[in-house]
Image (tube, rainbow, N blue to C red):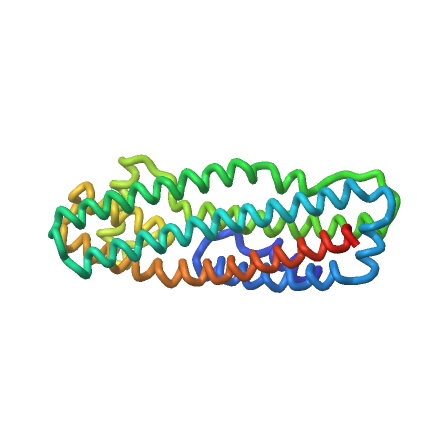
Length: 265
């Protein structure tokens, strides 16, 4: 467990979809270890010991924070997946021509704003959580403090990765002018990949393609094709993230139920 925890703590801070998939796999392994730890008789003895209510509350509060952060990320992804499905259905039907497609693009952009608003709220709630995770204590019970410190370290690392993932899903925060710059760069890189520098993530690319269509920066047919390609790239990322988060969410639930069972029995 300690080696998995340290590996995640030391993992590369740069963001890419493949890296996040790897981190989700690492988190699943880590929380499998936590699940086993919680079921140990020694853990039960520590948690039910008189005077440990404060630390038990800390652990339970942490489990709720993990569930909340995981839920926001998963809901944001599922929301985008549904919008993507509706948009591609419009393109396939080709009904209403450019007018209907334009309306669907604007609907997609509005949906992205809703997702980003929810993410910003979640990020605000998470702000400072990692700092609160590292706490000072005066309790001289080494077994209690070892257990609580380990579980808090797991919480901090997990929330840090989930926070980074929320930022990744949010995409690059940009004004309209910088969006135009990003769109221009993406269209240029499409023609000449050698000019590409810092590659925006899949969510930012979709945002840029949507903006390109609305602002008429290229022919509608070219922009639709480009947007379709970006959505195809995004689909596999969303699927990987959702599957990983759903499995992780189930781990969180099992651990929380185990903790509550210990306290209620």
